Length: 200
Length: 225
Image 1 (spheres, chains in turn purple, brown):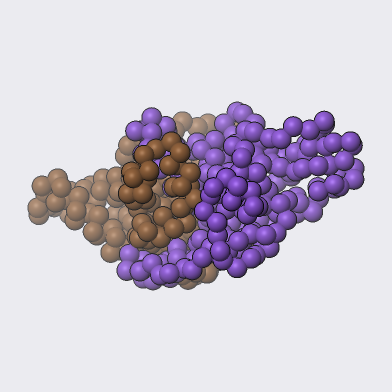
Image 2: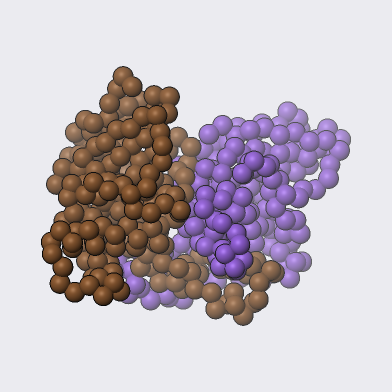
């Protein structure tokens, strides 16, 4: 990214401010959180309590965004299924694709009558990595997994990478969804770091 | 507390509920007037649920299925209301997931929309969460993950949980209905349903019909029906 200091995060903060007020992002964050909680409870044999479990909600946002929004070349290197759909530079378009059948079903008087149609290949996100980070943080903020921060790694006094840092259930977690090699809580190593809280 | 919330906003009470797919954005003051507006909307959504075919149909189905499970045939009107209160509370609790709103934003869905969410086919949910299912295969048996069927659920904060329960109660004629509020330090920060004089707080998984939390202050608002 090679930005010069001082790093101006205001544009990214405005992106999150807009995202967390967006009904599509809120609907998506809620669907993701509620269903991931139930799924983890199921596969843990009821060992994990999903009730208002902010760490689980954060994990859902982190995993989903990392799998869908991380740069294609990085995902391919990880052996993940490669998408072949149209390229989009707005990460919200990717969410809209995944929510389209849900919204179509809700338009019916009885959504159970909805029949899943062929949605075609998923769009491929090719936009800025910063915006993928912003969307992940917006999803977190939409279900009040807060506070949230931007964290920057610097080499030679220059910003080399930006990722998210999120507070959930008493702990701070680094979340760099642009690298599928990482998992929630991990980040790349840099000479120096800065972080700034996103006003909500 | 110097201020009360008993008088809901007239404009909020008079405005119709949003239609299917409609989203309304309203800028609210961070005062009791903002809370009064929100309560007006909550009341309106319960009132509209009493005549909404989606909520009415679901509420009657819940009560009939519950009566069948309990082996109850013809019941007196009083017993019927008690049975429906139990049935609705249990069904709503099973199908509702508590989630916070975004900070400084009140997001309220209608009971109609929430009922519809529970009817969305599992393959539609599965499509949206497929990346999570793929990731789950790293720790769970892949065949079991492939066979996993997302449950029929809806979600929301305490406002929506209360509206969800009260909308169903209104639809089968349980009366009186109201919202009970609780808070500390001069604020009211939690709400639960009051169905025929019985508390129903869906937001606490361990609670049962009649349970509610302790607060310094309480207020109640009846839903005119």
